[in-house]
View 1 (cartoon, rainbow, N blue to C red):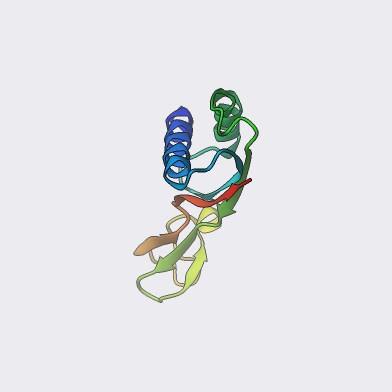
View 2 (spheres, rainbow, N blue to C red; view 1 turned 120 degrees about the horizontal axis):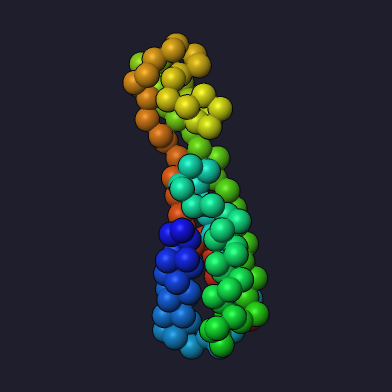
Length: 114
């Protein structure tokens, strides 16, 4: 489960930013997770619920997760389609020459200070 390592990374990054900006409390953190990023949102939340309470800065912080839908583009016909539904094969022209356009992200989108 790599989610715990990602939670530790987020906590460290937010604590460093808070130190630089002289913040004493964070109200919420919003993450963007790509639909095919290999991060399981429920596992991430479980790790967050365990870990964030150990930080004085983040003990009352709400975690918000936004899922970015995966989108694939076909190199042959140029059309896009939902990755999870159709996988690697283009539903428009049946080509396998496709690539992921978005949906693999892991971003700290927003940090809300109190």
